[in-house]
Length: 111
Image 1 (cartoon, one colour):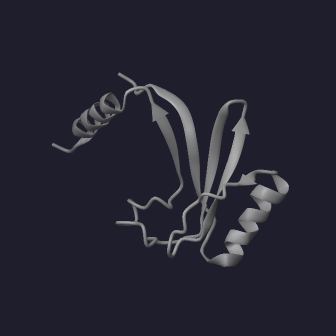
Image 2: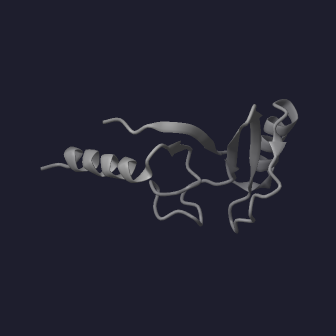
Image 3: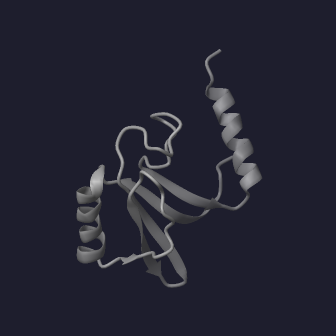
């Protein structure tokens, strides 16, 4: 059974390492696209960036900008790193979504 997504929460975008890349991304998202910078993004040591707000009616969405390359200080590996490109969703039933995901991972495992 498919997981029921109820809302897109945010999209994570890597913009490259260093303050210059982060500034260029901020100029694009804030200056050109007119998105508002979220002032509540916590300081993340070793990962500069910004959370940009997109407001649509009563729904609030974000783009998370990460200045990183390779495995960031937050990453466990090249495939488990929250600074990699990603999308985050709210789901109707988290426990059911986890069961479905585990079941599909089990079905896809080599035998």
